[in-house]
Image (cartoon, rainbow, N blue to C red; front, side, top):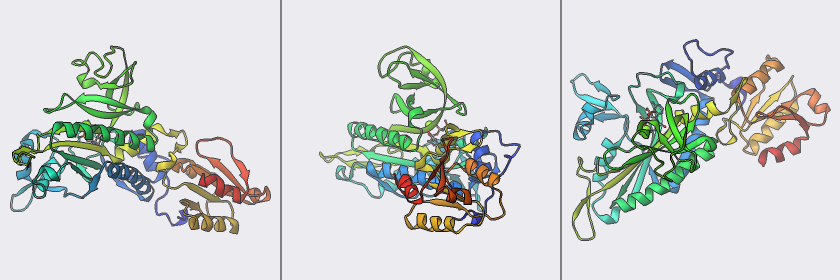
Length: 410
Ligand code: ATP
Ligand code: MG
């Protein structure tokens, strides 16, 4: 894409009312726009990043047998009354139409997917399976002050799994754990992300959160010094020793919850009478699990972990483009390299602006944070090629144009 065509512009300063680092950097780079606290528009550069994140998650969900669907955000009150959550879930947005009929804006989708599956499954032979979606969730977050980490409206991937018995759920749950680990490794935050015991709800002792260490996080976790499993502060008092290895030595850290997986048991299948007949011909409630990850929260966490004083430093796997090609002065060589990169399916943002100084172009490149910066100028051409610099390195080098393609394809 040509930068001269991009309708967004970078900004020297973030809005005064935006305190969080992730949102300040994302706004300044032109990735998101703040509509109000906790509600952000995703702009072209940000959408490129979210689509990369989405694709990583999609591949991992497909890999554990997930089938992709898309459920409505506008949901009948009756479904939420069936589970009792119409009155107990205090972050639920409720809307009324002209005829006084009430609806929920979905904050999660157990109330929709459980009755949905009742229409399709009857027998133990229909189990197990899992379905997931990428969809906007709405939550009445009263303290939306962590930038895109805590939205009132945000994209979530939510997967739901359906099983004949607890044993089958337990086995699937372990596979989901690995898929989640893969997601965070692939998006560049694996090293700082800890599997964490958290409160489980009514059907299991614990749920598992994936908590990423950052001062921007709103959670506190206690990491076991021996096995590196963590315990959420919320349950630490009731869990004095590590459930994994029984050690009692922990270090305390601030963290953000990037994912959460739950064994639901029959909590949602029971109210909707979601049952199958088992091998003996008896009716038995379906056993469920649910698995969530917030996309903007993941994007914001990546930004919190990967930046310097000049801007974002995207990991290659989620960067909006692989190459930021910058032409200094009008030169045909840059145009040719741009066309060749495009032809070779290498994602490139081409700074072809003619009225912008070199300094301003470099500042923009640092702010936007694309992994490879490639400058084409009279000077570089005289030196035999282009000047390449990685965003996370200080020094640039002049390389031949053929070599550039080899380097980037690696
Ligand atoms: P928190 O404790 O941070 O409010 P939660 O435990 O209520 O989150 P879950 O219901 O477990 O959230 O949602 C699953 C995932 O969705 C979370 O692990 C997180 O990645 C994401 N998520 C939850 N709330 C938000 C939000 N307000 N904005 C962005 N992402 C969110
Ligand atoms: Mg959670």
